[in-house]
Length: 248
Ligand SMILES: Nc1ncnc2c1ncn2[C@@H]1O[C@H](COP(=O)(O)OP(=O)(O)OP(=O)(O)O)[C@@H](O)[C@H]1O
Ligand SMILES: [Mg+2]
Image 1 (tube, protein in one colour):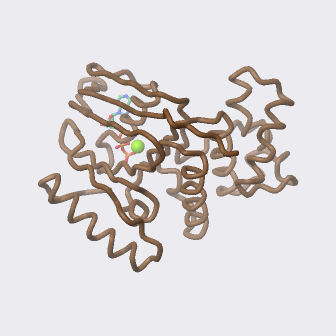
Image 2 (tube, rainbow, N blue to C red):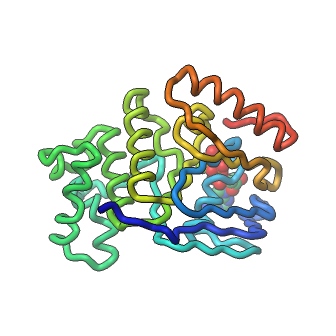
Image 3 (tube, rainbow, N blue to C red):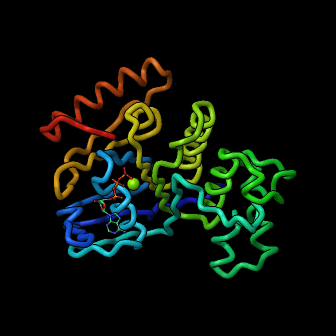
């Protein structure tokens, strides 16, 4: 049976974040619950990673309230693996931190690594002996091993080649459905958003706020549909935010 997280929820209200002298986020509200994948978009430097940091409890807001029900896991653009540990032990890192023994962590992560496309012969390899795609699969397994209810993905597919990106996108979507996750994907790519996500939130302004929040329905299956839907999405974001949308 896949794990079920009916209570996973992200609820932020009136969140302000100051970084150094600068106010980065102002009066941000987010309410996400139940299964679904939400894209978080906006120009570089606007505050997307900062907002994920607030949700994960890593960045302290200067004002507002944060309520997150369910364990939170994060996947970053850089897999951030420990170079001296095997793929298997890297995948079990979160479990070890939660108090599981080395053997228990290995038992729990073996199947997960296989499910995410790493053959048993690769489990003993260190990150330097793995390809970029394999390293990112290990990072995905490490995030999922702790059985999170909330999954935060910060541009996890950027920098991978096109076919690998397509594989890992499908994997991410399948995981969200199988595990009933409340998930956020930071992306600069409207095509990725319309193929994978149920909803798109746009950060804009200075300081940034949620300038648009639109539902995606249905998700695009083919590339032709996706390109059409992506251009419609951009128009909707511009109408809702009342400004020209820049994403990169
Ligand atoms: N650790 C930090 N200390 C001080 N300021 C920071 C820190 N991290 C980010 N900032 C600032 O906060 C603002 C938002 O940065 P953030 O990394 O959240 O943007 P982003 O939308 O994720 O950008 P990108 O698309 O390039 O990843 C930027 O002005 C940045 O300089
Ligand atoms: Mg970022």
